[in-house]
Length: 277
Ligand SMILES: NC(=O)c1ccc[n+]([C@@H]2O[C@H](COP(=O)([O-])OP(=O)(O)OC[C@H]3O[C@@H](n4cnc5c(N)ncnc54)[C@H](OP(=O)(O)O)[C@@H]3O)[C@@H](O)[C@H]2O)c1
Image (cartoon, rainbow, N blue to C red; front, side, top):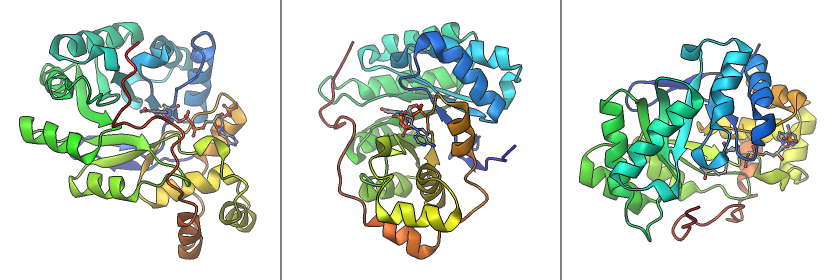
């Protein structure tokens, strides 16, 4: 089984660099998919209240027979649950749904600046950590100004910021903004829906290393020092996506992949996204 490196977060906790994403994993199949991911060797799961599959995290853990303390579990507070009381209730509901006592990491899923409740929501996360409901706290889809507001108003820095990063949306400024604040960047939709699988820098590196395009892209994230959470419902591709720690991309290959950045999102723009339901 592949050994996945651990990264140390700014609060001293450690987290596997590569984990398993659960967006669009159908709730009725999710327990089997989580079980398969854990049996393949994943030790970090990325869920969210919005994904409607949090129950499968706990059920899959129990079905796989993996000890709770061996798996790093993340979930997220949805946009409709911003505010101090609602965010606290959301965290308690997630724990109950998963059937676990504490989370390893909770994230604010989106800042929703139009609601202007993300600072209060952050305060709820700080309190949940103080009360032992969660070990680490972080954010997702935050811009530099959102980060500066929560840090400035509470004095507490998120451990990570989960943002969209893939070869066609590399976000160098946002990654630098996170790093300047000692915040780890975790890449969501790391494979970019496969949109650069056929690009020359990817296929050439794949041919040289004998790896797949997906493995080359995941290796690129790893070599940039990013945390990454690919998703696959297929056990063979689950195993493939973990198997990215026995080869290296050259400096020239890393540079060639940099040229694929066209700044195109696959998902919404965090500065305006406000879906509540
Ligand atoms: N915070 C946020 O706002 C946010 C937003 C989006 C996503 N996320 C998180 O990030 C995780 C990853 O993002 P994602 O699920 O959107 O996309 P992804 O992991 O980049 O890509 C998943 C897609 O790629 C396919 N795939 C996976 N491995 C493959 C391989 N080796 N070869 C070819 N195709 C492969 C999958 O198909 P198969 O399943 O058929 O293999 C699926 O269609 C999510 O699951 C979620 O946890 C967070």
